[in-house]
Image (tube, rainbow, N blue to C red; front, top):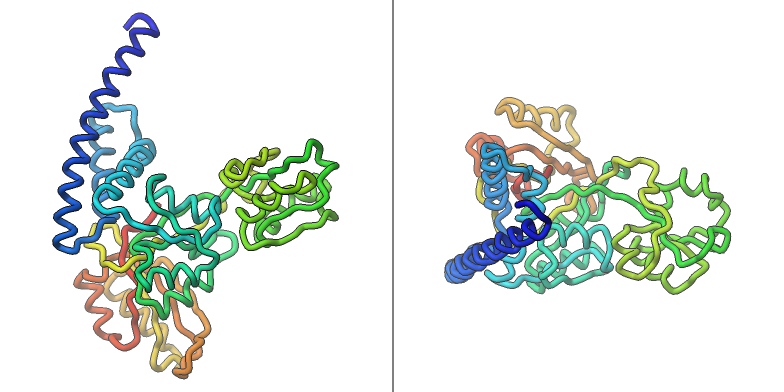
Length: 359
């Protein structure tokens, strides 16, 4: 290929081959959907998707390809999303509004073609899943800066839906406004935590004494700022773009390594992938006795099961327990060594889900 035109001709020919192969893949996918519909199988299989990405990454590396894991994942997550919609179109409920970080997390796994349902609260997402008005739900469970989302844990403790996947997403804030100059800005909208995450930026630009109006989400902040040229929003760049507000500054958060862990909820059980994490809820019968939690955790240590998280929450029921514990550990609920531990605490443990651990 000697000229740019030669390169373009070659690319067009390759694109034609890619499209033909994708159409062949989707025909197989349609058949998979028919089989799953007959057998009641789950459409979303995170462990299967992870296995495909790992296999292709290894293949690319061994053949000297230019695509690394991140590039392959970006391409194939969208292919997977299109495939799922061909198998069986599903509705995904998420903590809205449109343009929120949770919406971005949902689209990163389910693609642009899915049917999304924006809801005003985490509680509404759980209720929508329990009533079968949506197949999947996406909610935040933890932030690297602000810690656990208590409402999500409380709802998991009494819901029939399970965690089927997790994903971590970096959180970057933008400063968006229709104002021509900073001096024209009279008020700023954001979620309360949004202001807290951008204190240094607000101080550096003289916004400390300007009205800072907290709203229910950063996406809502963008909606309000779009209606008033003398206001601004601290929000995601996606929300700013979605609601037509120019972004004046990007990445204005104090800590640039902040991320949020989101969980995907549904009503099925994942198969063992070999790269799993399990979440449980623990209510110890003798929780008031000294050492009861230590003895419980010792059973995990004896089986060499690594814990990744333990969080205590005050009990809100009338059972007499003062606290319960949310625990994440590595492994799948169906593994023999994990069953050995949990069988000793049958009436004290509630399984919340086993899923491919996120990265």
